[in-house]
Image 1 (cartoon, rainbow, N blue to C red):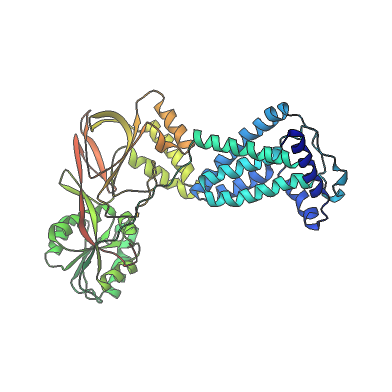
Image 2 (cartoon, rainbow, N blue to C red):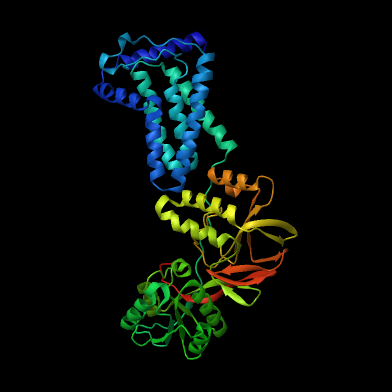
Length: 485
């Protein structure tokens, strides 16, 4: 089809829309086109997406605004200067439907349509369902430009093409984040007796743990498992000694305390061949939450029904057991700073602030692993794979994958701190060459500048110049609710 025929067809379609007697178009199109003036509509939607708290929606909002800005510049300062076209004759457009202010710039391409497509496609790259809905809204914005007499249909299509192209090119330059997915597995269940009244259970608990949570656990267990034996830990007692003594007469070893105490109990349970029941009585209770025992009631229900599953445990130098995480450098400080603020300003901003402060004040450690030597201020090691990827691991969906999750931020290189913060701001830390992530069954490192302290499950242990971590696959039997799999 010749350019002349295309132009004629473009005008015919415009006239057909203009001549359409539609009260719906008369009422909705002017409102929609005004909402899209100066991209107010898209800025408002971006604010809503950011406020939603969804990571993909927030990434989409940021990508959408950035893409919209580039598209607006390309459309208004470049495309409209290259392609000159007069605005349509609005005589046939109903008066109540016409745009209040007819633009004086070139009609080709439609800036409103370009911005609409840019925002919709950019958001869709990060969150496809949102993108589909916004694509429909973008199409209506394009229709409003024709219905109000501001553009020919060809102008709108050209705008859509420019906006979508900028978004796609941006997606190739800065690829969208694809959430890590781990295939779920069936848990290994172990047959054990039902204990409706808690017979054979020996619970070791510190009444003062978790700012008094321990006392509440004791009261609930006495009421719900009246035959369970309860051993209270005093400030002068050695918890490990009490746990080993309890294991000698227990059919089920139970513990109520923080993650460090739970790790100690896990080591005793593995050595004794006993199933472990975990009651949440610490500050964070990471392990209890990840196995689904985040309440006393959940643990009691698992004991009563005899619901036991096998999960992984990691040993440090074959001496100490850890169930959650280990770290060197300033990682514990980073976590404390982030958790202190994330409920006030959100996890992304809290993570950024914590990262800035930690990189400024953290003392770096030089380590060697896998024949590599690097300097790090932030080193994380987890039992099983944590989600999400990047340097803000928060949860596990499997507790028996046989892997150690290692994450290292490398510092000491030129502009490393600035590069790390820039990658964090763009949401691309996991793609930075300064970020190292491994999923391995064993991991060993050597501290090159002398022994360094190793924090494990929230407690700082002795300094070591070499550390070797090894997964013991499904070595620990724990009471776990049946629906937690």
